[in-house]
Length: 481
Image 1: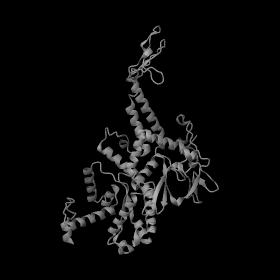
Image 2 (image 1 turned 30 degrees about the horizontal axis):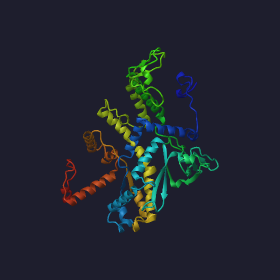
Image 3 (image 1 turned 90 degrees about the vertical axis):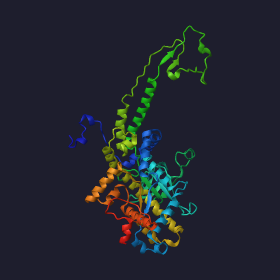
Image 4 (image 1 turned 45 degrees about the horizontal axis):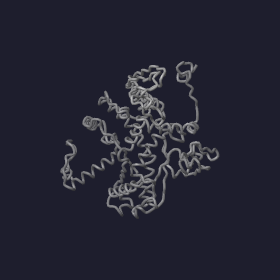
């Protein structure tokens, strides 16, 4: 008898449930290739799985990618070497943004842009569960001497193990279990020319040259799993059920029958009938369910019925299961907005925003910021910035720079703006809290508002920003100064 019901085997409903303790990395070594290949097949051929991938890209990367936001303060600017070459911290910020944007047009070794690189990383994380980004440093790559490239999961052999050098699933670790190197194939292992080679060459690439992005659920997990892993069986069965339903409806819509020539009729009109390349009689009635049988054939009736009457209920239930497993909004995944109210879709949107923000943060910390910092370091060494930047200045820029992912608009802007205003006026919320809810940096927003108002005043442009009498107009601001 067990103390916890969850561990019971006497309950008939759980009698056959045996969950074994197993190393996650041993499990990945034997099962990851199958899971990855199935995920790819579903993503390319199943509309729901493809919709999930699209939702990941749209909500994590968006149409523009992550925006670079250097926030250099006046105090830091005055104490730095930068004031010798720039007139203000705003000039420094604009310079960095322009230079990084130029690099971003040819960020990848094979010609892709920085935005395309972000998109490719998220797609691979969704479909394969991981992707390897490699730093390349070479003056011939571009004017900054730095570019990146991506390698699919198969390039690092999940079956590669070596207990002496502590290699687990293709990754070498030090005594603290930190990555030291990655065991890469020199070409895709499934390319025909590479597979036929007598020696499939592998090389060890230092971990300092690699960024490994991966979906993990356990602390010691070395390789990533596709996002669809928890719901892959449901997606497959849903895909097959939908195909079977379409086939059933197609068959039930036909009027089935057979044409059998008389057995004693030797001079039938079918003797000279048109035949296909296989010698079979071309039957123009076959598309509506009639087939030609040879004389004397025994005929058995077949009357298919429509078995898809409950498909809507089935698909809806499966859709909720899949959406929960993928961590996406059901309505966005399925396009089903029937019976949706403002309050329900708003609550769903609030819940899912936190999930997307968490995924954005992972991409920023793992890929976006490391690549930006590497670009700064290599550009400085190559002299791409001229004499304006010292090592201390570069570190200052790194510390004061942030990246912002896409935000999400309000479900009902008027209602929500009025609600935010009420809370702020009551003192129950800060303006910064409202700004952060829209996935923006309050310091950056305040800075932009200040710069915008100064620019408008300089140009003599008057606008009514708000009806709130507590916020001064440009004319009132000028008089106070």
